[in-house]
Amino acid sequence: MTKKERIIKRNEKIVKEYLKMRDKKKYGVRIYTDEYIFSVLAEKYALSPRTIEGIVFGRIRYSWEK
Image (cartoon, rainbow, N blue to C red; front, side):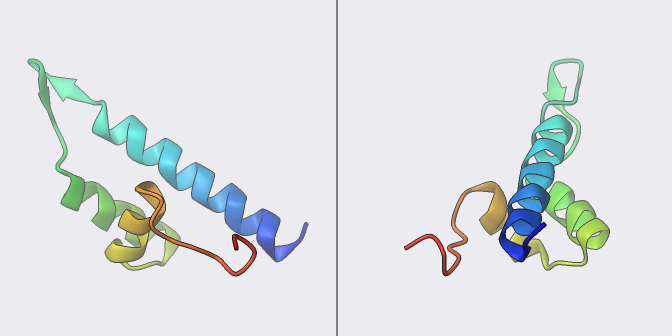
């Protein structure tokens, strides 16, 4: 598996986990804030919360995405 494939797979997992946590609700209200989710995922994947945010919202660009 190439580095590109590993990064794409990792990013897909991050987005999937973000959506799963974002959709958790109690009494019709979201349980977790975006900031909390970014912090949890950042710790899990050893990235900064800002990087996680960029991945989730598609703001990160890689050299192969020209």
